[in-house]
Image (cartoon, rainbow, N blue to C red; front, side):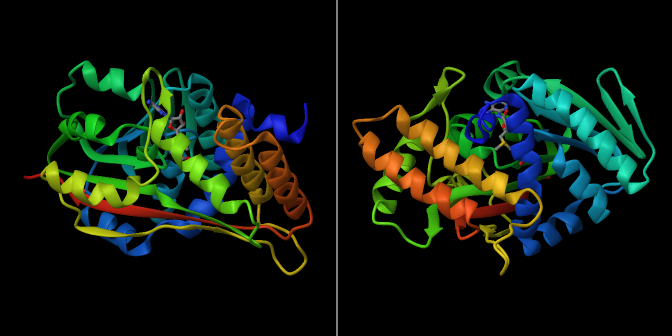
Length: 304
Ligand SMILES: C[S@@+](CC[C@H](N)C(=O)[O-])C[C@H]1O[C@@H](n2cnc3c(N)ncnc32)[C@H](O)[C@@H]1O
């Protein structure tokens, strides 16, 4: 298996999400995060994170001290990622010196019970669940679903006065540096793919999700209490080394663009795509590639 192919597999997905953690750590908007911490219910809240992947947000919130006890549900459509989440969080807790026990449906980390729920979000919401979440989290997920369809059902899971934290919502701008003459053509086609794609038999995402969330949240009666940018900014040091596993993160981004555009040869000629990928791959290997993606974070609460 080549490095290019590994990112397309489930283990590649898990490695991508682990590599993304340090990029997200830098990106998450601190003002929005501070507002979340001030709104976080005391005691033992019930948290629900949709499209939770490896569960890196659990570690982040425990690290911040924003969550210490309660129940944290990780919902995802990818069962292998959820299995990975159990192990990833168990290893993370061990490295932090926190007590953690594996359980059949998740794990216990200190005083926090983590439960894994394998479900596709749209189907989950169609099976009318009563409001049960004090805190609802979606990180790098709402740009993968049809927000106008999903948002009302999602917000119905929040108890009155419950808090939402919707972060890393892509907002129509990716920058690769140094610039390349094909950049605009490639990114226009990639955004078109985001706008038109279907997953799980449903429309799946939108390239300007970030800015549109202002209106979607207001129309749903839950305008944000704080919002701000959470751009991914990935760059090498002076020796051409990327932090942590961020070279793999960049490779996964290039592979995602490749996979999306290979299906649309009428939008971008194969020769143009392969030339662009070859140049970007060489820049990545040489430690010269810089990547910036514009994204937005939101926090707010449901009417009390
Ligand atoms: C970009 S990853 C983000 C994962 C995690 N939130 C993070 O930031 O590390 C998107 C996640 O959403 C999940 N996902 C995408 N569409 C979904 C859907 N319709 N229902 C449930 N999960 C979904 C994927 O399986 C994946 O784990």
